[in-house]
Length: 488
Image (cartoon, rainbow, N blue to C red):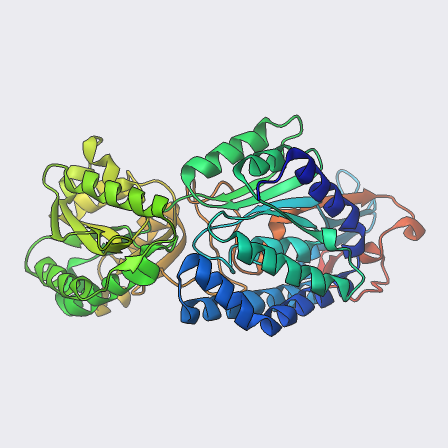
């Protein structure tokens, strides 16, 4: 199913030709809602196909498909509302210094977006996932590079989306699909591709990011690459509810066989009796977790080799040994290490790298200084979590200070919760400092649409020549800022 360079070119050019049919916001919103309807109508076949290729199970896949349809409808609502266009109008003001001319600013679609599917979310981060939904909402056609773990499902979903497009007179080229590694490379280089979205490994994402920057005309690249998602457990929190924290951590780190991008991969827990109680709870819960199947054998091999290499480091223990289960499965587990081993550069830096699968590292700290030292060495993350006691959460103790230490590290900071589970909501932010993502944007939530747009201002343009969005009479009824005043 490898696409040739000619087939990639054809897909991109077809998408480019389809962009005009997305110019009408009403058509775009209707298309997105029809896409959700068509996906729901095809649910049984889609879930069956997805399970055959990923073994994620009908329950998980049905829920993920529902999330995908909800996301499509949420972006349709955003398109209808129109606030994402960021309309700002300034009338001339000769009294200002310097004088202000007539200026009218809004955002326009970039053009064809290349979307690189993820392995671990065959619906929500694939052909009909967040990158595609937000790009179409912005008015950008897409060409999706399918993930090799679910090519059949990718074709099926693309067919469903094209059927939805046809209901509104939109050509099927609005959603292109290509397969193969070389096709992905050709796609990022194509001169008609205006932006790209990627979810995957640091190595693969960085290679595409560099290729996007090295083009004769560089393009925006939003890549979600890797995240450790650190957790800090205060001594007071461990003393207050060690059993609950241990059980919650076990559930989060093993959810989906540890294949979530927000899996907690490093936990700073206190040494001493309170930390011991937490580890006992974690041990009991992880020991009761069944072995599971990873998405493909390459991931399984990397997981088995990765945990073995980490477990072999000095002062690293395995209270519950992670690694190979049966012939095709892996067993969940966790490692422990003195936090002092991570406070300075050395061979234990491997423990500060993401290991994809059901494993986490618990670093036992002796004092607050060790916590600060480890946090100061962490790369960027999607999430960072702190488990506080009841008093600390009420503002007593170091709660606010720890929150301030975690904020520079991540795009989403949690208190007394667990990072797995990314709500599709207007205030959501799913991104973070590099290598979590290569941009400051989010791939989940309403503001994900901003990745595929750019601002443009018109100066002293006659009203008859202006786009309808920028005319004084506001024929489209858009929310806007008019001469400094917000109009809804």
